Length: 314
Image (tube, rainbow, N blue to C red):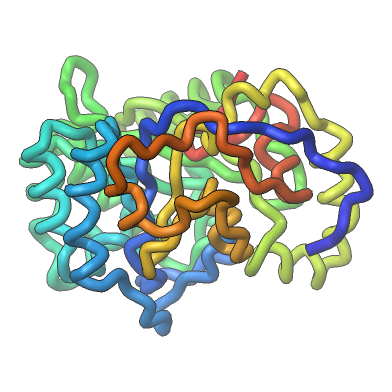
């Protein structure tokens, strides 16, 4: 990563509310912006031993949300088992879905399963125009995404008055900060409804992180230093109290703990004695006020209106 000669402010953890697990790097897509470097040829998958720890950790720490990501998390053979067990604990589950997986052979019943368990879906759709989506995510992805969204709508996802949440995620196609979330959400809502008859709950805008595949892309086009400087110059200290690393813990496919998904991809394990998922089963363990591992990439979360897995921060 390009070095920025300004130290990111130190921050500390609050109470743990969300456990975000990267269940595996295998994906049916290979997107140009992917900070995980996921793809069809990745073989890393969370073991049954680690999967079985997750409900125990959730119960022991009174965690409110399990956030499942990948890769395409639905490709893990124990995905449905894990979702079923965690939902039985009356804990919210979020599936970070790429949409096209819902159209793949062998996954025809996935939308039905997700709706039956009332799983929240957060789905990538970087634009409402075919050419922009296919450029970033691969040829044919947009049409499959539209089919998947219509299928989810048919089960009640994203429909006003229904409790099935369908959130969409936007990220810029180039090295710039995302636009206003509210303004873009209004545009998405009108365009998707008028063009395709599609409805959704909320739109989250995210800044692209200059790590892994996206970092390589920025290097190739000669924009890495400029983009890192853009993030630094637009640092907004008001976002520090809302960054997701204060209340979320990231778990890699081996069960090791990180303060966020980006730190995970950079191999920056969290500070302190709590380093693995099974450490969270120690009685009376608490992460509150623990220091968060920081780096120059953290400016990607605090620039402008802020960016997190739940969209704008302010």
